[in-house]
Length: 168
Image: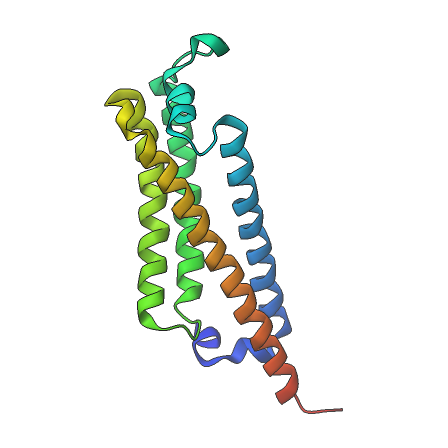
């Protein structure tokens, strides 16, 4: 962590490479998360209700508690770790503290609301469907800002490191 905090990663190609690969995987999460969402629903509350509550015209059944539990089990672990990693890296970026706090809150909050809202739609009230849509949009936005912002920071740091490196 000292390398990130003090900028030493700029002079360490292996560290820059591991950070770049991590961001590539995070970008993959960003893309596949959107693809999975849009393969099941769209950005309308009606589609969210149909997905979780079933739709007779599509011959789909309501989601079971067991099915939602399986998804939550995987999402809570993987999303939590990925968001922790990205927001932790963002703390070392030269961004204002307000932006960092907003990204941390938006990332964790929207991921948690997104997970909870499916349960709420299915077992509490269909009125929670707009929350699912809003949480998804906010999460994708926050994740995109983190991935693209950190990639930009890494690129700028890499260029700065090459300029400072002694010539042979």
